[in-house]
Image (cartoon, rainbow, N blue to C red; front, side, top):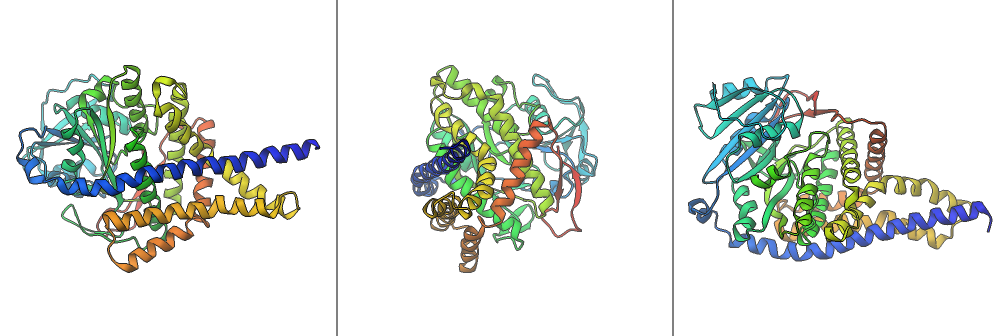
Amino acid sequence: MSWPEIALLIVNVLIFGFFILIHLFYFFLVVVSVGGAYLQPRRARLLVPERLMDSVTTPPLTVLVAAHNEQATIVESVHALLGLHYPRLEVIVINDGSRDATLEQLVHQFSLHRADLDYRPTLPAQPVRGFYLSTLDPRLVVIDKEQGGKADALNAGLNLCWTPWVCTVDADSIMEEDSLLRALRPALEDDLVVASSGIVRIANGCRVAGGRVTRVGLPRERLPLFQVIEYLRGFLEGRLGWSWLNGLLIISGAFGLFRTSVLREIGGYARDTVAEDMDVVVRIHRHFRERRQPYQVLFVPDPVCWTEVPTTVATLARQRRRWHRGLMEVLVRHSGLFFRPRMGVLGWLVLPYFFLELIAPVVEITGMLLVPVLWWFGWLSTTAFLLYLILAFFVGMLFSLWAVLVEEFTYRRYTSWPELLRLLFYGLVEHFGYHQMVLVWRLQGMIEYFRGRREWGAQARAGFQPRPPAVEIADR
C-alpha cells in the first residue's frame, strides 16, 4: 500500500472507531438509565411532601441565586423561590455588579432595606457593597457586590450561608413548588449523599404566572424545540445513567443541591473557568475518592426546574461555544484523573466518555467532509459508506426518539398527541442540519480555548412574560 492509501485507511479506522465507541457508551447509558426511568417515578410517589414539611428531620436550606443583568426574569424567579414548599428556607440573591435595573427591581418589588450582616469571607469573592433585607419576607436576603462572575457570586453567597444544605439556582429559572423536597429526598434517606440535582426543563412555550408554570407547552420556535430534544436526551439518558453508577459529572448550575460543608472543604467554586458547575462536581468526586470515603452524587429526575433557553441563532451559538470551551477547560485541568485506579468509574468511564464528547466535533465534521468524497471516488466501499450513514445519523436519531418515549411513558409533561408527534418529528430531523450546526459551534469553542478566550460572551433574555424584543446584555 502507498502512503496516501495508508493515511486514508488510518483516517477511516479512526472515524469509524470513534462512532462505534461513542455509540457503545450511549447504548450503555440508555440501558443503565432504563432502571432509573422505571423506578424513580414509583419512588417519587412514595414521597409525601406534607410529611417532610412537618418533619423536624428536614434540614434548613439556603437557595443561592447569582444575578447579573437579570432584570427580565429576576422578580418572577424570586417570587417562585419564596413560594417553594420547604419548612426552613432562606433565599440569598447575589447581585453581581449588574448594570441594569436588577437591584432596583428587587428593592422596589420586595421592599428591601440596607442591613449589617455577619459576613465572613472565607471563600474568595469580590468585595461586597452592601446587604439588603426584605420587610415583606424575612427569608429574602440580597447581597450587592462588585462584578466577579457567577462562581465569585456563589462564593459570596456561601460566605453568608449558615444552613447545612445549599441549592444553586440560575436567575432565569423557575422551580416547581415541591422540587426542593424531592431533590433532597435521597439525602434524607442516605447520609452518604453529598450532592443532588433535578431535571432542567425548557420554559419557552409554557405559561408562567405568579412565579409558577401554570401550563406546560412546547415552544413554537424551531430552535427551542430542538433544545427540548437535547435536554430530554441529556438528562433522561445521560445524567440518569451516570447517576446510577455514581459517576455524575455535571450538576446543572440551574438547579443543584450540595452539602454546604463539602463546598467549603473543596474551596468553593473555581473563579477561573466558565464551567464552574462541572468543575465543582469533579472536585467533589476527587475529594472523596482520594480520601477513600464513601459518598454519592445523584440525579433525581422528578424535581423540575424550568429555564429559558436561547431563541436566536447568535445567542445559542455563543452558549454552545462557551459550554464546549468549558468542557475543555475542565478536562484539561483534571487530566491527571484519567485512568487513575483510585478514581474508579470517574477515571475509567466518565472522563473518557467526556473526552470523546470533546473531540466529537473534530471527528464528525471530518467524517462528513471526507467520507462522501472517498465513496464518490471509489476509495470507500458502498457497504462502508452505508455503515457510516447509519452510525452518523440514524443511530443518533434512535437515541433521540428513545428519550422522547421515556418522557412520554414516565413523566408525561407533554400530554397531548400533537405535542408528542412534534417531539417525535423533531427527534427525527434533529440530525439533519441542527446537529451539524451545533458541531460547528462546538468546534469554534475549542478554537476559542486554544486562542485563550476565557470570558462568557453575551446573552439575550426575553423574560417569562410577553415583553419587548430581547436586548443583548453582558453574560459573565
